[in-house]
Image (cartoon, rainbow, N blue to C red; front, side, top):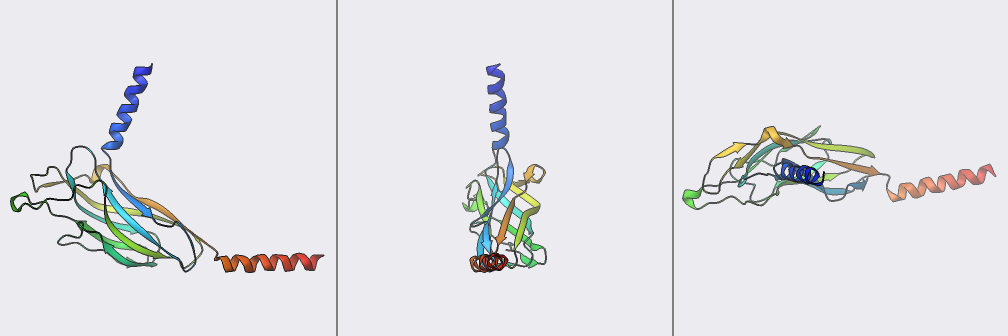
Length: 186
């Protein structure tokens, strides 16, 4: 029984290690109206692949409350774009890096590797779910080859939530209003 459990545990670890994923990191997931936070996307790969080659994705959610869209080096290679805001989030994020061994240019094999960041500014109270919608996720399979392969079929999309609460001053006013109402009832 113990051997079977150990095999299942090792298989689970191996499966997790080979997963392709985009992760979403939110610096401060709880904001008041008018406050801002930084959202960062990273790409991770598993198995025996060498490095991330390119990612094409969008961030769904958050409306048009995005600013300071930026790619993070080295994923800001030729033909890339930090995307553009839309009423539904950020469309058209294209990040990538070169791996060209004949010229002794090698990709950064950091895993996971951060590739995009932006500022989200809260404009209304509520809970805002964010997710990625990826159409390309390619990896370099070896350090000494410039060819890449798609790993889109195995990709786990990124997700996050930003909660916007009333500003402290608004809470104080609500509290004072509640005290005044309680005094009137007496």
